Amino acid sequence: MFRQTSRVLPVLVALAFVACDAQDPFEIPTSASPPPIITETFNGTVTPSGARSHSFATQASGSVTATLKFLVPDPTVQMGFALGTWNGSTCNLIITKTDAVESTVITGAVSALGNLCVYIHDVGNLTAPTEYEIEVLHP
Image 1 (cartoon, rainbow, N blue to C red):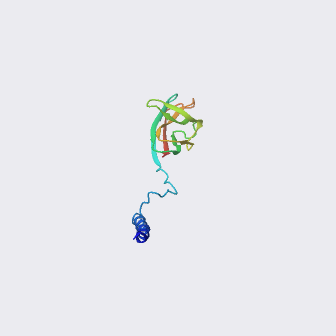
Image 2: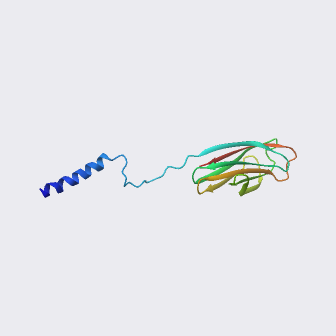
Image 3: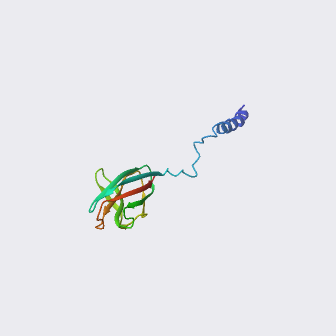
């Protein structure tokens, strides 16, 4: 009787694993899916000596890219452009560029979910209000 039980048990265990083929609890994932990329667009106007900031929240770690899509009326006017962390009221600048023109791109990385911001400001070159659009891609 002992011999028959020892032969049946491995077959039952094998059948149990075949029945659970969809989700093997002992299987180690070979690759993780990248987090979805979120696109946000911010618009506004910067006045001479002025600044604007826009906050956004990341959902995972990954790359963050901000693009100064347009400046109107002068796409060649140099502006300050930055990425930073948002504390609820202030954009703490981390990556800055003081000579940004239309189409300038800033790229950084975030290691976890959190509150970030994009910042644009006059560096002394504006003589009239300037409209802008900024596109941010983030996880």
